[in-house]
Every structure is written in C-alpha cells, then in structure tokens.
Image (tube, rainbow, N blue to C red; front, side, top):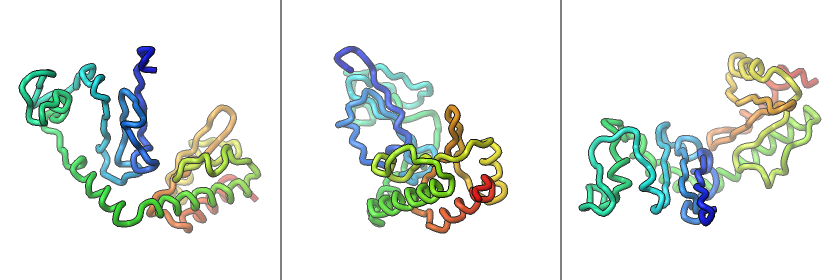
Length: 212
C-alpha cells in the first residue's frame, strides 16, 4: 500500500494486552491503541505510534515545552523532533502513563497468558450456553473469535431497553447492539470475571428475553 502512496491508519484500541502486537512487523504508518482496556492501566493511557518517515506529517493540536525541528540541535528527548513536539501538552497530568510499566509487571507476575486462556474458555462457554437457550447459531467458530470477547446473537428485541434493564435490575453492564435485522450482546471477559458472573448473565437474559 505504501508503494501506491496509500497511508495506513489503524484504530487498534483493543489489541494492546489482548493479542500479541508487534508494531514494527505490522508496518502501519500510524497506529493508535489503548492501554486501559485489556492492559488494565488507567484511562487516558492511549498511545500513538508513527513510523519514522511519517512523523513529520503530524502536528500536535496542543503544544508546550519543546519544538525541535528535524535536523536541529538535539532536544530534551534524545534529538527526536517527534517526541519534542508531542511529549508535553500544557500541564497535563502524566500519572496514568507512568503506571503502564506497573500494569505490565502485574501481568508478568500473574502468568497472564494462562489468564487469557481461562477467559477465552469462559467466554466461549457462556456463548455456547446462550446459543443453546436461544437456538441461534454462533456467528463464528471459537478459534476465529477474539481471545476474551465474543459477539452473542440474541432474539430480536429493543436492545436499548435490554441494556437498561440488565444494568438497573441485575447490575450487569454489557453492550447490546442491533446490526441490520440481527441483535447481539458483546461479551468481554477479563481476568477478574468468574463463572458465577456468566451464570448471573444467563439467568438475567432468561428472564428478560423470556427464554423458556
């Protein structure tokens, strides 16, 4: 694509901490990701990766200390004009970003690949049980699903009403979506979710969708 002059911009919000991510091998011109979703860092820990030859095209909307032009004397961040321009945004609090190493260390200490495998198994188990209740086929095989997420078909309904009732009546927060003429729940299972959470969701859906 680059040979044809096409700029690639990837919205990779869910990838960090969810699936293996090699930005160099990916080869995108620009990649934006979040660390607060699956990496479990605080909100506000998004990041932008720009390949070196595309960095000069970006101009920060807010600037403060540092504005080194490419080729000028090295700035405070090792002579990178890109970092000098973007590193400071006024007096923004950088505490959230500084917590990312702790989140990575936590995952390393708790064998996170094993946690992901458990989450994947639980997500697929819940999806399979719901499919048995509704009679609606899955939209993909387990091996083609994201490790900790799965879209679960549900009978046609007012998804906004269903979402509100799940939250207000059962304390369950889960996206309920309509796509064309079909309705889905987007199930996400993180390391802190337990099988009883799945049973609670299935019981609530049984009542709200009248899956008798």
